[in-house]
Image 1 (cartoon, helix red, strand yellow):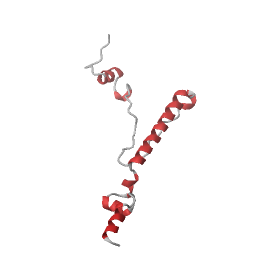
Image 2 (cartoon, helix red, strand yellow):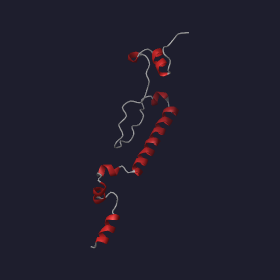
Image 3 (cartoon, one colour):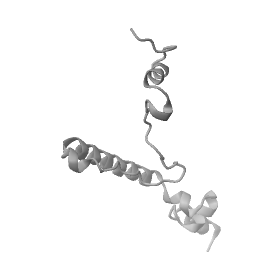
Image 4 (cartoon, one colour):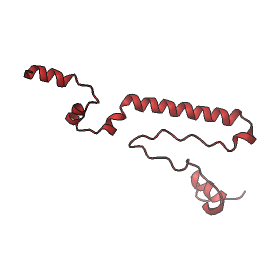
Length: 112
């Protein structure tokens, strides 16, 4: 094999081959999540969230109250969500009026 043939051979290797990964300095796990797979996972997550919302909004409240939102497909570099961002008022989080005043930018809550 000549040097030119070797150059052409290496140039046209599949992007996920061991040699191509070694040249790029990446691992098989890093190459698994290429942009196409990221996009597909995002689309699947979106469809699952829309299906959840549709069932939750148009379903029987007695039957749908136990349904939980779908977990997104795990991806490298994306932290797993622990709790949805919910502002809770009262209880151990403080009084409702004081928390609302903090959220909406007033110095303190007043009764009028």
